[in-house]
Structure formats: C-alpha cells, structure tokens
Amino acid sequence: MNVLFVNIKELLQVRENTVDFLSGKEMGQLPTLKNAFLLVKDGLIADYGIMNECPKLDVQTVDATGKMLLPSWCDSHTHLVYAGNRENEFVDRINGLSYAEIADNGGGILNSAKRLQEITESELYNQSKKRLEEIIHLGTGAVEIKSGYGLTKDAELKMLRVIKKLKENYPIEIKATFLGAHAVPAEYNSNKEGYLQMLITDILPMIEKENLADFIDIFCETGYFSVDDTQLILEAGKKHGLQGKIHVNQFNAIGGIQVGVANGVLSVDHLEVMRNEDIEVLRNTSTMPVALPSCSYFLSIPYTPARKMIDAGLPLALATDYNPGSTPSGNMNFVIATACIKMKMTSEEAINAATINGAYAMDVLDKVGSITKGKLANLILTKEINSYNFIPYSFGNHCIEKVYLKGQEVKK
Image: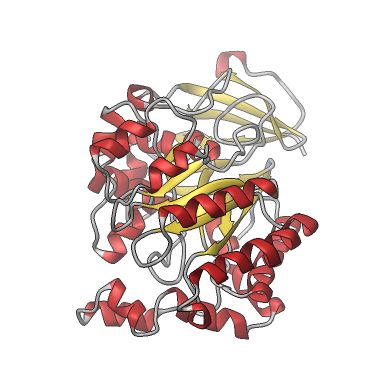
C-alpha cells in the first residue's frame, strides 16, 4: 500500500545518509523538516521533502496538519516474554525489603523462572503477544526480547521459540537474545560452573540449529556472574554466531564493561554505577551504552549518569527493560520523559537515543531508526502538539495519534 503524509508540521529525525550512531555533542542535533510531506511505497520510505515540492499522486493521503511525524521507537532491551507477574514483590519493596532481600527470600528472577517452567508454550505466547501489541500501540517499531526466565534447557528454548513465533506473526522488527546466564537456578546453587557448562554444551547448539537467537547476554554482577563467567559466555556465544551484550554496572562496577569492550559486545546495558575508568574504556569504541531509566524509577536506585557520559563524548541509547520484577512497563514514551526529567537529557538527545542509537544497539539500523529513503515506514504520528519538546513534557499522557508499521496503520 502507498501512503502520502501531507502538511506535516515537523518531520523528525530526517537523515539523507544515516549514521551508525550519535555520540557526545552530536546527540543534541535532531534534523527536521517543517511543513513537510512523506511518501510510503510498499512499506518503505520512498520520498520526503517540503510541501512546496510535494508530488501530486493518486494514493491514500493522510493530512498531518499540526502534527509531528517521526520514526518509531527502537527498544533494544526487554524481557517481555514472561509468565504471570510479581506484584507481590512490589508490595514487599513498599514494606521495606530490598531487591537483594526479595531475591534471597525466593523472589526475583528465580520466582519468574518457576512460573515460566510450569506454563505451556501456547499460554506463554498468548500472554506475551498481548504485551507486544501494547508496546506497538505505544509507538515501538523495533524491539529486542531476551530469554533468561527459564533457567532450564527446556524453559529457555521455550522462551526463544515464543520469541521466534512473535517475530513470524507480527510486522514489528524483533531481535532475540539468549540470556540463560541471568541467574543461577536453585539446583545449581553450589555448582555455578556446571550451570554455565550446561548453557554452553546443551543449549547453545540447539539455538544455532533452530536459529533461535541473534545475541547472547549475561548478568555480570556481584552475586550473579563474574567477569570470568562473562568472558566464558561471550566466547561461547561467538562460536555459535551470537554477538554479545551484557547486563552490567547495575548495582556494582566489577570490570564487566572492560571485558565487554575487549570482546566487542554490541551493547552494555544498565550502567547505573559508572566510574571514570568505565566511561574512559567506552570512548571511541563500537559498543553502545544503554540506559534503562524506568528500572531506576521503579526500584528507586540511581539513574545512569547520562549527562556525564554524553558530555564525555559517549553515545547513549534508551530502552525500557520491560520485565515483571524491576520494570513492568514497555512504555518508551515514559522512558524518554524520565531520561529528560531525571537524567537531564535534552529532548533531542532522548529522541536520538530512542531511535538511531536504539536501532544500532540491536543491529537494525539498516531498517529503522531514522527518516531515510529505503528504510521501513515504521512511524509515529503525533496528535496536534506545539513542538517535539511536548513528547517528554507530557509524561503522563502520551501524544501519539497513530502508529504505522511498514506503512500500515496499526488498528486498536
């Protein structure tokens, strides 16, 4: 289907020649066109420009008077395939228990794993597709989804097969990540090395055989997995064609960023605790730092020091961390607002972090992330707003009117 958007108040993130990612001062630059048009052909961005140059075509036309058009959000870090919820732990935190204390009492990741192991693949798919549909309506046009709530061979493969089925059945761009090293299951409590070897010898060959994942990830954190464990998992992933990512520096800085950079990981995610040496090692690398402000908001932990990192010349992406324990929300609009309000990012920086840099952080930059000819027409049409600053300003009421995937309006 061909669609022509006309009278666009402002077309955001216009890049004639897309860049890999934006760093430092570049993140404050958001190229736009005012009083613009955009033409979609066969699901792709075919043309755009100012209204004075708009072609006269016999195609479906969308009048965007007073509205903004921008590329859809790219959420590079989620765990949206999970079973049930953990609202009881939410109450426990209100009553004074810490994240670590809840985990020690049988909650946390192991709680989610128990539920997921018991659920059928069909029911897991049905629960997960509802969450996927919700984030699509909230403007997300590309998403990475991790396993990691299975913690057994069968349950981890179940999660990855559900992700694959979602990818087959929905037009949104989806990337899959194997996060078997999310926590050590109870049955391996005194044999972490045995669990890691099970992931490597029993699960990774199946993932490669069935083409179930694009990336491999590990939770590099005190009480979970060490720097040496991280090196082991990243090397094993490479042998099976999986590029690395790391959950790192969420509560403690133990050298995970350094091992990630040394292994050329695509992204290092969380980064609530950042030392000067962690910032320095990320300079001039191809590794994307990813901040997850909704997690900081929900757990009342420090926020990623975005201002310090960007001012030091680093790139930054924003993602939701959508999961049942620490971020039960996949709302990228809230993430962008929170990044501006709590992390002192500008609107331009936050939009760049949630589009181009987010696309890079999950290796879909060739398809999405900017208004560039030939990319997928995964688009957000806003309501009538004064400026794009209204997007983070109106944090409680998102200003999306319509969402398009591959040029097709997503019906509610």
